[in-house]
Length: 335
Image 1 (cartoon, rainbow, N blue to C red):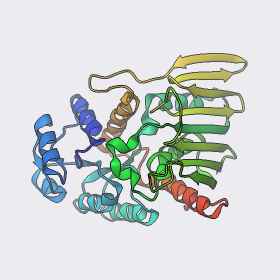
Image 2 (image 1 turned 30 degrees about the vertical axis):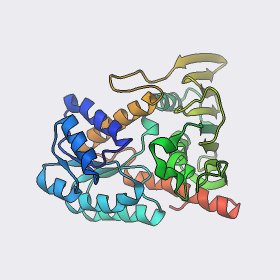
Image 3 (image 1 turned 90 degrees about the vertical axis):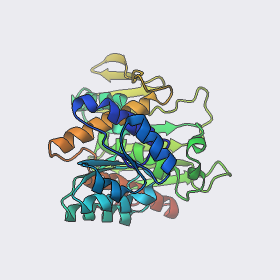
Image 4 (image 1 turned 90 degrees about the horizontal axis):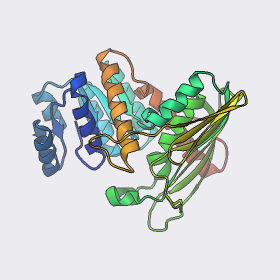
């Protein structure tokens, strides 16, 4: 495990939970020696401040990189050059070219590589996907997917107030990935951004419209400035309409499915685990489910659903959204 900071604690707890399934946490690493030592003592494993030294000292098959995005290219390269598989925290990297370079490096060394895109592995989103895949609402043709909150994300991650590209790259990327997950790939992107909080550098609100190759249209919304009581953080709310029905997920993770004139309701929220706490439990269990998926696919020699190459398609939407916001026109995502 590389990174022992704020959100990485969820990764560490998830790997601990997966030990009965065969995933063994072997070592931890962080540039901050005190964080590395604390994690090593907590989980009973060696700790390091240098990733290369860790990989050369301990038998490791798969490394989980949960550090800031600007470090990902160099750290992923250290793993790839040794033929070691890697799971890289989203966003993959700050810019498109770096994402492509990470993928090409792994290909050159035939190293397994995936991105820890966890929203699609949340129990609620998995249940939505199951309804779509079952054909219950027919062919999806329109959706609105949103993550709107005023939760103070700067308290735990103060550096986010300083970045030039904020909400699309940090939060919107999750919601864009869900749009691809539910409605398929995208051929055109239009976006408008806002900076409603004067104390930060980047955009804190984005409204994005996607035209999917299937013909479906989706609206993706993300903001850190929604003034709502109660705040739905960290829930993803959505509406998906199809040729035969619809799915609506409202606050409290209540799913309403309409099909053939009938209406079904279900609570699709995540239960509390021994180490999860409200309101973070939804995301924390998504981390556990993501780690389980990564471990199983790596063990079986199969690509992850959020493989590095697949995630490039999501990152292309991020870049297209920023370009659209800059030019105020529709943009075709890179392929």
